[in-house]
Amino acid sequence: MTDSAPAESADPLEALARTVLAAYDLPPIKGLRALRLENNATFEVLTDGPSAGRFVLRIHRPGYRTVAHTRSELRFLQTVHEYLAGSDVEVPQPVPARDGRLVVESKLPASEASPGGLRHCDLLTWVAGDALVPGNGLGPNAVHSLGRALALLHNAAEQFEPPADFELPRWDADAMFTTLASPYRPMLSLDELLSPTDRGLFDEIADRTRAAFAALDAESGSSFGVIHCDYILGNCHLRNSGGAWRVGVIDFDDCGWSYFPYDLCPLLGNLAGYPGAIADNPAYPALRSAYLDGYRTARPLPAAWETHLPVLMAARNANHCLLTARLDLSPTPREDAAWRMDLARRCLELPSA
Image 1 (tube, one colour):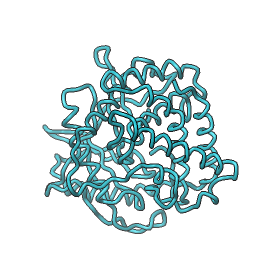
Image 2 (cartoon, rainbow, N blue to C red):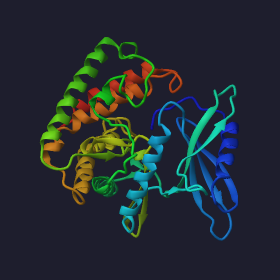
Image 3 (tube, rainbow, N blue to C red):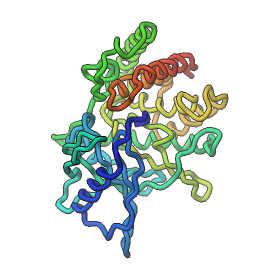
Image 4 (cartoon, helix red, strand yellow):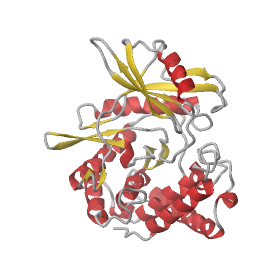
């Protein structure tokens, strides 16, 4: 997830990380470094010896994903990792604990910076590469590869057969636009969060998104499955190998059931500059074409789906108002929402083809 949250203290989280790592059969640990302490806390884990490796330990923040959600996410990742084997696209591989668990729970002591309590954690293999942006290393060829990578993820999702106890959120219009159904579990109401003008636009985007999803249900072609839901430039690690791009995709923490065209939209927003390195990016039309053309190299993208993209890009930003609608995640939720709704307006002005 991309929005900032108040950071917890590193020391108790590092102590928790070391406790959790003892549950895994790893070589001796030679390094433990905090990567992010916002939202989920993540640590780089370096091991030593003949089988030395590099991993990411995630300590999940309370009040968002349940243990069942995270366990299901990791099972999905296992399937995707197997599907992508031998390709130029990589996702993290879950590392089971010594007893086979994919999720390990441990208690974080209470402190001034944190209420403490039980946290659930998991360990993933490291995905190499760099997050690139327009104007700083990201050109049409790399963007083409990002489109193809997302198509391969959707191909894997289409073949995925969930086990009986599989449980992930459903990112439908109710989950995206109502506080009651939102997986983000917002604490503020929409009227507390949005100005009257922005509330009107929010409701308009919600109605248009419902119509788009209904149209996708009625159209031919597979449009629904488990999606990444946060496929942004910051979650795509790129490496140039022999003139060809390799793509690593990380951070499946928002993944859930939804529509594949919606999954195209977070990165499209980045390319347009909403948010991104270059606001109102003049290269957006060319980059958009490269991205969608790359997708089509591995998976059909009906022209009818393209007509929904500006609305779904706006929906991505409007939905994120609910992400930061809680003071434990953002000290300025109303300002965050106003910014997101401005981005949503800009998305609606973009061409649909």
